[in-house]
Length: 430
Image (tube, rainbow, N blue to C red; front, top):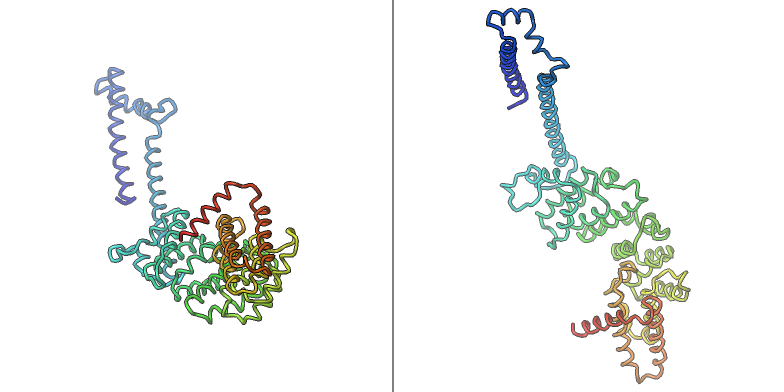
């Protein structure tokens, strides 16, 4: 029933109701006055009955009947207009997602055609009804699915989601960085073009986060291009961003740059940037985390190692690497280890396994770190027990480790010692 039909229906019912109400009141008035039919006509002609029927302040129970009907009609009209606006808004959103974002996806996902696309889980029209936190949660669950590159269904679903997030201005740089790693080359290029054209319209907070969005998006795009073997596109991004944005952020510690960002930077540039140029410019930043991340990957680099050796001689307040990294460097450069490839590899592999070059200090697993170090020290001590020249160096390693435990863990921590023993035994059994 449309609005016009509803209006006519209510009007007819109101007229019938008012007629019955009027007749009822005339009968009531006549009975109260003891009027005959002839005298009823006289009273009606004189207007006495209609005075009773008229809307006034003394008969509140019969007032506003027509106003109530008009109010209902007005409300119905308002609801109808709102409904029409919602339909227009939905159509506008779907059209925007379909044409303006420009990502390649299956049109059936946008149209909501589930009958012909039973394998898909996501439809654009359904996303419009979801609160944004649920959309983000759905996105993260999709990103956690382990699939091979080129999975068309996942790629289509992610393009629908990213288009939806862009439209609602809820695509953060962090989410962009994760989504881009699952997308096909064609859609990565489309999204890259959109980002270059209108970065503030694509990424939430692009203009207000001090450049962190640009840092993260550039790293993610370059990494994905490299992963998909589009080396020219990756090199183009590096050429524009490496010195002025990435390395400058590391030097100034701006844009909220983190250890993981710097490790990603090293991995992206590896093999795509001339080695000497990269080493020279990384050293110029004087950023301990970046230099350590590079050395962790290229531990034979003499320039990086020399810088780190000088750094560990500084006191705790001025040293630019953390206590875990400092102990690794001390062990690596110890004469008992530095002269033997096997032991150097064992030391640097502890750093790589525990990701000391990429995770923040508070996230490092202390029990595992200590267990690995103690196992290594036991091995070294056993091998060099009859080597008088190296015994002194092994004792120095033990002292460095003991000092580390006092500074980082504290002395007499029995519970932590038990945790180390548990990890120790687990390592032996695996």
